[in-house]
Picture 1 (cartoon, rainbow, N blue to C red):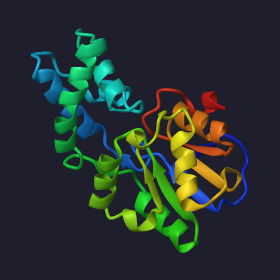
Picture 2 (tube, rainbow, N blue to C red):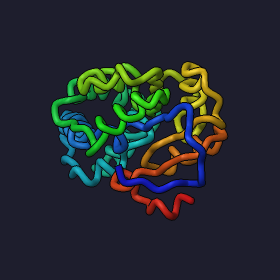
Picture 3 (cartoon, helix red, strand yellow):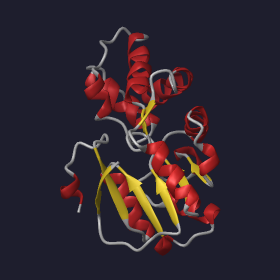
Length: 211
């Protein structure tokens, strides 16, 4: 994992990880789901790099961005309908093309053996996140898995991070967030904890620009 720090930190009691672009490279599966959804409305497919730039705001935001990029922006009830239609498509494309990011298994094993509690916080639906983590055999290392549908506000709000830390019984000041986006940094700051940014994830912003 190639990382940059948002600010200095002491050895944490717990580490929270983002999922997409941090622990797993899920962009190929997400692209397949997006393009299946678009094809159902006779819209042109998007390229992998286009979809990768759309990841991180939850499924509804992904649908909104994808249809806009295909020239058919959706609003209101039309967006609601497309979001509902995306759900079963999304579930069919969870692990077929997804891979672990380099070094993830070794890093999680190291922290687990070091006695550091770990959790995953993602804007992806919680059951989908759990299925992906189960597929790669990572759940045994994790004391908390919090998806976007488990909280009222998605990242960059701190809700998911605070819920995960509550489940791990660790205070924010004793924890660390690892992610690949500005939303991860903002959520960590709002929760009162430091963050590490992964280089090579899905963010379109330079790590240094995130502070």
